Image (cartoon, rainbow, N blue to C red; front, side):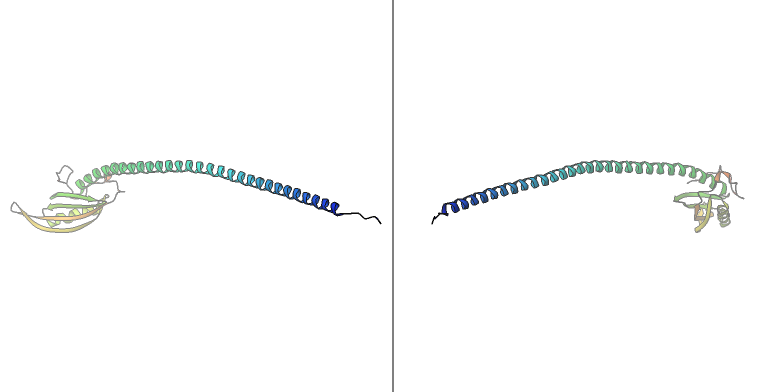
Length: 201
């Protein structure tokens, strides 16, 4: 009977299997390392691309912020110019209105009344003066009520004063200006004195 010793053959087979296992393990490790490197590269590429986009957006936002600041500055300049224009127009309109007001007062103030002061606040005028009698003050108020430029005269105070041994009626009244009226076309009211009378305003 022939006897064959299989131990060396088995040992060689085990050794070959171990070598295959180590080789396969090394290959798997290399593949895993390659996969990790590739994934890391892809992620790094995405991050780099996103950072580039973020940088571009930051630059665009900075440019837009500058444009917004420029627009705000232009709006402020425009508002300032419009405000100045409004002031100039108001002054020009007020200048014409002042001329109309004095012309209208010259038409409506009857003889025997002397104005001491005029004070305008908005469209309200405070008139202070001296009249020869209370009837003259009543005539003045009727004339002001009938005026196309003035309205709603309101007598605040009237009192008797003595000047040079003569008694006068010192009065204080308010009247409103109607800015839409055309005073230049107004006709003198009955009993009104001509514009040449001197008045102290």
